[in-house]
Image 1: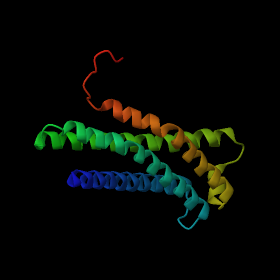
Image 2: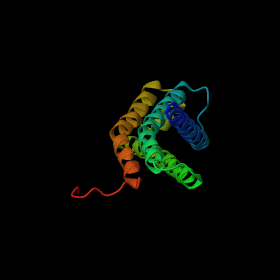
Image 3: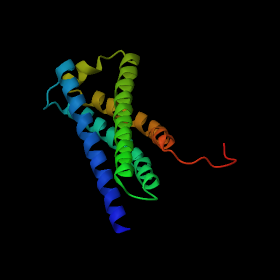
Image 4: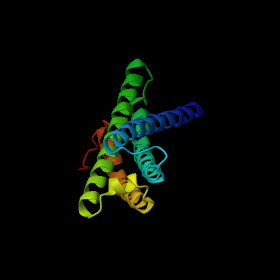
Length: 167
């Protein structure tokens, strides 16, 4: 039993590290290149903090379904097929988490920035911290609203048996 708990913690840790690293690298590259943002800009750093926290919250919500998939698939016997199937589910859940993180960040920023009369990217480039804080708060707010739905989507992909009379 202790081995299973240790394995679950290790899987959750590596899912989190992989997703955080991937989202950070992709968005950091894209934002620096597209909006000519500098690494030492405090506003950009503030926005990055919001993005990292958003990714962590969303990935935290899919760890549960990932572990449920491992438990369900490996409940009868642990062999190469069940382990590879479990790894496949984890990969799909990481993909879903990263995809929804990108959608939340991109969609949230796009909607907010279109609703205001301020050029937020220019303000962040000028190191306007309040604009970065509001942008980061929007991203975090959207993540909090959607994280349970993303977890539900992942949970729905697990091939649980049908329960008679439950619809």
